[in-house]
Length: 111
Image 1: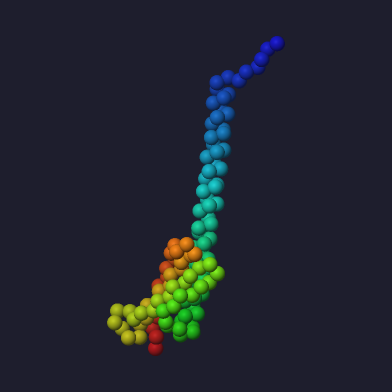
Image 2: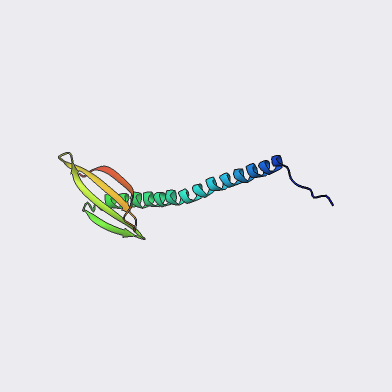
């Protein structure tokens, strides 16, 4: 009775194939987990853009904290460079863990 055994070359080729598949799967996993953070920042960007539009259209130029879903928007409005009618509106989006996701600033001429 003969036992058929693999050679060292066959074993090395199989090992290389397994390592290539493992490397590709690690890259895919990192892209998926990193995409979650990107989606979170896109959501924050949309929320801050919407709040900036609401602030300008509504004329509510006061400092305040706004709760949207599980995010907190910190709005601050101050005069820009000692010019009376020019305002700097700063919006910061903070998640529930206290991590700052995004900051937007915009100058607005208040007539």
